[in-house]
Image 1 (tube, rainbow, N blue to C red):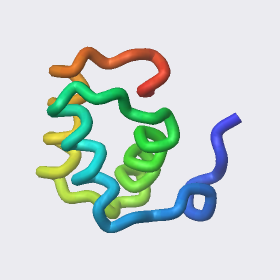
Image 2: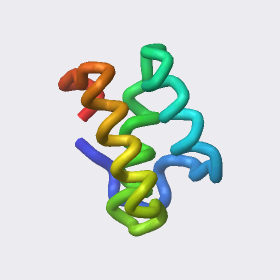
Image 3: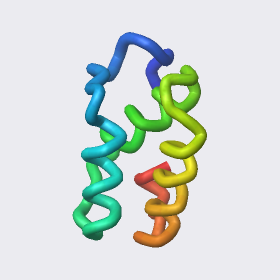
Image 4: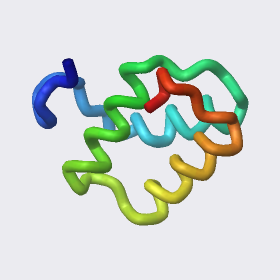
Length: 68
């Protein structure tokens, strides 16, 4: 069950940057981190550039079902 957007994950202003850094360095990314970024994306808190960077880095790392 996926929680309703908005209140489940603590929102960090650096969440996208921290997650991008992990993806670029091919460091394992926690499922909660990816879900948090997706929630931020769906709630419109990320710029188009941040979304593109996240999806590109996820693809370059080799996305896994647990990431999605």
